[in-house]
Every structure is written in structure tokens, then in C-alpha cells.
Amino acid sequence: MDFTLDNDSSEPPYEQLRRQVLAGVNSGDMVVGHKLPTVRALADQLGLAVNTVAKTYRELEKSGIIETRGRRGTFIAASGGIDVKGRRAADRFAATMHDLGVDDATALKMAEAALRSR
Image (cartoon, rainbow, N blue to C red; front, side, top):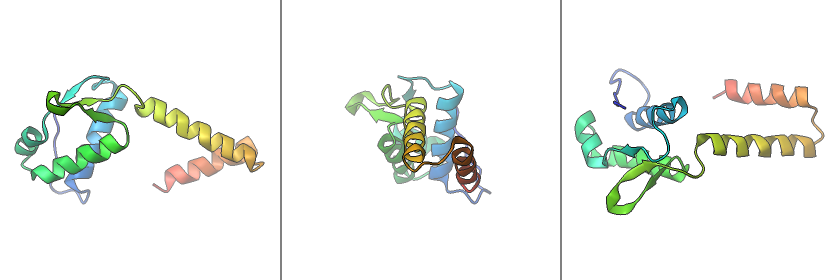
């Protein structure tokens, strides 16, 4: 997958890059085990500071989307990918709404409102 940056965007470069990795995972272009470029190589390719790419990778790793395997490199994670994490989050939301006695229709409206506000 080729990463690109929109220099005219108000969105910071690290966020543009993070969003592109997530989009690649969601679309299936980057599957479990897909090797990402090294921080240094991607920084050179995009004309970014190494720390900017490192920040993106740290955030993606913290979210469980990627994993670093030492000298072998950085890969799309096998455990806790977007589908798994999304399902867990949805299950927690549903359990919370149930515990609060909120009906399904109201819970869906609340979820939709939260998604629209992002």
C-alpha cells in the first residue's frame, strides 16, 4: 500500500498516516501479517521526521492494530484487529445499555449521535 500525505490538510501528518493504515486494514489491502515499512524508510518516503512516523506506529501499536517484532519489523497484528476490537466495544456498549435499562431503539440513537459527533 502506498501512503500519501495531503500537505494542504488541516489534519496532522501522523493522523493522516494512522487513518490510511486503518483504511488499509478495513479494506483488506493490509491483512494480518502484512509487513509495514520501517519507521525510517516511511519517514524518508513521505518527507517526514522519523518521530512523526514513530508516533503513528506507537498509537497503532497501543490500539492493537500493529505489532513490532524487534528486528524483524512491524506488522499488522493478528490478535485484536479492528474487527475484534470493534466487536468487543460494541458488546461493552450493548451490555452497558442493557444494565442501564435503555431500550434498543434509544441505544441505537445514542450510538448514532456519538458517531456523528466525531
